[in-house]
Image 1 (cartoon, rainbow, N blue to C red):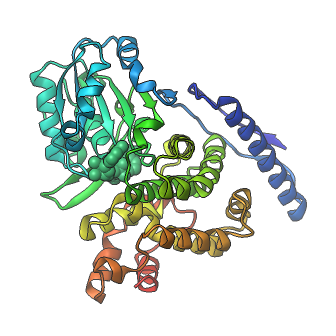
Image 2 (image 1 turned 90 degrees about the horizontal axis):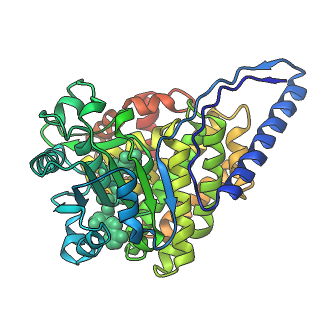
Amino acid sequence: LFLKAVIVIKFPSLKNTSAIIQHIISFFNLIDKNNSDKMKENNTSGVIDMIWEFELPVKIVFGSGKRKELEKYIEEIQGKSGVLVCSRSFEKNGTAQKFTAHSGGRIKAVFSDIRPNPTTKNVNDCAALLRKTKADFAVALGGGSPMDCCKAACAIAKGDDVIESYHTGGKPIRAAEAIPMIAFPTTSGTASEVTNIAVLTDTEKNLKAPMNDPAMYPKTAIIDPELTLSVPPQVTASTGLDVLSHAVESYWSTLNQPICSACSVYSAKLVFKHLERAYNNPNDLEAREKMAAASITAGVAFSHPRTTGSHACSFPLTNLYGVPHGEACAFTLDYFIKFNADHADASGRITAFARQCGFESAYAMADEITAMKKRMGMRTRLSEIGCTTDAQIAELAKASMSMLMTRNPIPLSEKNILEMYNALR
Ligand code: NAD
């Protein structure tokens, strides 16, 4: 057995680094064992062509209370004058002001005109403030919506164009026009703090779509689980299911690779154990910490393999029916697990994932996800979100066919997706 691996790792400093490394080592052993079992089964031997790269140029800081060290982290990126980008509720309830106080006077303005699922207009307005104040850094405080808005605005801050030119217009981001960003996630969900992706909604084109560029990575991601204590139960459930979708989809993505797969398993196990605990007891700091760890490791997990069918379907579920992002991802996740277990598990990888998470089979894992969704008040049928007619279902299937679908372990046609939605009526 020859493993050919090209590895470029800048693995960040996590509090649990040794546990994660231990997990990665045992995961490599599992892969090794699965491969040699497979070879024995098939009576084959030889070279497994395994070539991949891993690079995550984001410093990750994890720990309750870390927000109070903001000034130190601004100093590290040599920021002098910056803008805080957060949701309006944080500005209204005084969180933004308290936060700004930790910056040693370096945050000079606040931008909070951001709706959930941020629009390209939100980004242009944010970029306008960055330009007007000549900001040389920005700090995002919030869930995926403020982080994505901030990320996209920072990427064009030193230029003079609008984000639509880059989002859908094909214009490449220029690193020279970007300013650095520090991200503080306040939900355990999107992991936007470690990705170079911003998901934006262009209301004129009625399109929600991701954009990405190497220049869009935040410089520093600071995960302070205390910031998630105030997340209401429904948002905890939805964002936590986003974490699970990242973990599962990155694992089976056609672009999967070992470091990311190890993080997928690590993250999913935490979600199965701690999400409902956080949902039922919002002030349980330990459960919040575990979910924050699940979120960031799922972020590492999908950083390279990206996401697949469930995320592809989530965009029109949000756009057309207003389903919150995580709930929209989880809407089809259990179906995809069964579908992929039936049609794309010849190697036994998907079953192995379910077993690592403590289930007998992929079907048992999918059934538990359906049950979890119901226990947490998430919707599971299209009739519950107002999608009832054949015409609506056909429109939804059509709009779900983005390129993310091509990373599913087995190719999916619009007919497959239509069948799925009909089964979820
Ligand atoms: P969100 O940022 O829209 O926040 C959801 C709600 O929770 C908002 O009302 C917000 O005010 C509230 N909230 C957030 N933190 C809170 C806290 N600590 N206390 C109380 N209330 C709080 O939701 P989200 O799920 O974090 O982000 C969704 C967005 O992120 C979507 O647009 C999605 O497409 C995008 N996304 C981006 C990536 C990426 O890699 N960039 C990945 C996945 C999803």
